[in-house]
Length: 330
Image 1 (cartoon, rainbow, N blue to C red):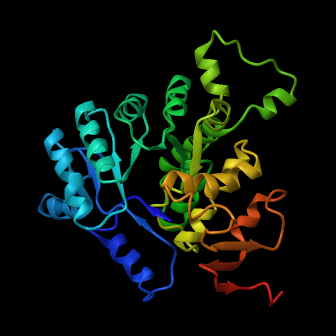
Image 2 (cartoon, helix red, strand yellow):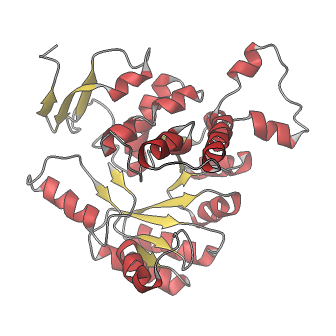
C-alpha cells in the first residue's frame, strides 16, 4: 500500500515501522510523510489561530528551487519511501525539477497530484514518476508520458454517485446541494465512461474536427488505454464512508473502472502487476513467481467474470503466512 499524505509529520512512517516490527498486523506500506504544497494551495479555509500548526503537520512548503530541494531532504529525515507533490499552476518548472532531481538522487520516486492540463505538463516536464488523478490530461500529454515511461494513476473516487452516498450518510444535504451533487455525479460518469453504448446504438463516431465532441465522448479511461501509457489504479480514499472500513471503501472504487470501460483483467493488473512496477517493487510484488513475496488474496468467484469479487476477499496471505481464511467456513 502506498500512502500519499495526510498522516501527520510521520504517522504513516511510524505505522509502517510498527507493522514491519510485528507489533501490528497490516499491509506493507510505502510512506510519503508530509506532502509538498505551495503556500495558499490545496487547503481549505482554516481558523487563523490554528492554521499554521495544522499545515506544519500535513505539508512541507515549497517556495523556490532551494526550498524545494530542502523539503525533500527534510522528509528523508523521517525515512520516507516516496515523495508526494500537489502541483498547481503556481509551481514553476524549476521548483518541480529541483524536487525530482533531489528525490531521484536519493533513489526515491515522485508522485505528482496533478489535475489540470498545465499542472500535468509541469509534472511531465520535470520528470515525475507518476501522475495522480490527471483528469484533464490531453492525448499529447499521454504520448509524452508513454515515451518517458511515466505512470498514469487512475483515482476514480469521484466516479458516479460515490460522494453523494458519503454526504447522504454523514450530513443533511440542503435543497441547493442535492441537485448540485446529482449534476456532478452525471459529469463524472460522462468523463470516465467509454464509447460502448454510443457505438452499439449505431451512431457514428463524432467528427474529429469537433474538439468539444471528441472531449465529450472520448473518456479518460478509453484514451489512457488507447495511448499505451503505463497505468495503475489508486483509491484517493481520503474520506469517511459510513459503514465501511478504509480498506473496504478503497477497494469499492476499482470495479468502477470496469464500469467505465476497462476490461476486468486490466483492472486487476492495474492494482497488482502494474501497481508493483509503479512503486518500484516489481522484483518483490505483483505476480506469483519464485523469489517474490508470497502475498496473496483469494476470492470465491471469478473476478474476470465479476469484478466485484474483489470486494469479497475470503483469504489473505502475507509473506507465506495466512492472515485470514474464511474459505474453510463456506
